[in-house]
Image (cartoon, rainbow over the protein chains, first blue to last red):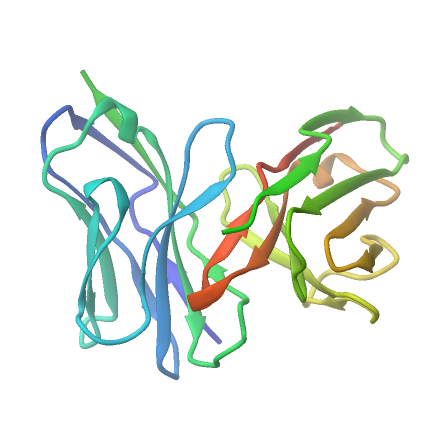
Length: 115
Length: 113
């Protein structure tokens, strides 16, 4: 069985400062990893994903994440945040089964940008 | 990409009643997924709905409590039956896309009194 741990439930960051949102996973098989963002009163949208290849993945809005197999981590980073980045961020994992689109989500990290 | 319309966006219901949530997609999709997002918790998959067959429910969810319809390739409904305050959650419809990407509706925020 897969699981995802997001240790930080809330992360306050000053505007233009860097941020890292942590995600660790457990799985007995190879995985696909995702970060989704949920802006206030909106549905989830995909920020970025790791399927294979380069372990450094770049996504939308200047976010990137690095897959680290030995540490079973997929931390999300942005070098300089903006007010508009205030949202809930979810890490998710899917097992390596092409066509299986079921995801296991973490509990989410609420990112608050302080002006 | 897929555009998903979900309604109602929110509702307040009385204990013991039922609510049906609708999900409309702007393209034909094979699988549709229903998730629940309880306050302060992660998204949990309720069931997978395939057109023309019975929905497949995840552990802890049963058809009598969460009946699902999937009459065609662009539409699905989820009913939350005999509601109790513990059913207060956000319910999300999603569909799969290329590259294992999921598209989500904006959700239905349900409060049960």
